[in-house]
Length: 61
Figure 1 (cartoon, rainbow, N blue to C red):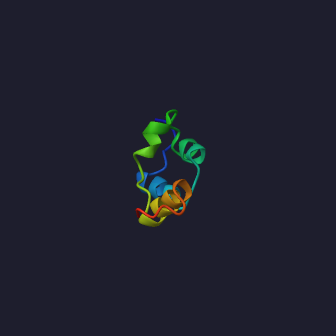
Figure 2 (cartoon, rainbow, N blue to C red):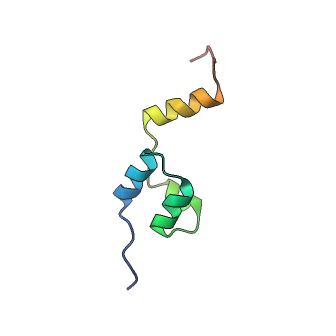
């Protein structure tokens, strides 16, 4: 059996803290980004930040 992988909860905490996708892939030893993305859900605050970056001053919000 190979070395232990990082627990999913640790990936969640790293993702929510803003760790890069490459770091998460390295820590989890996944080769495909889509396999890492499913381990964490961005916080409401992180989503709001992205929305503000994509549509600054959008009055429809």
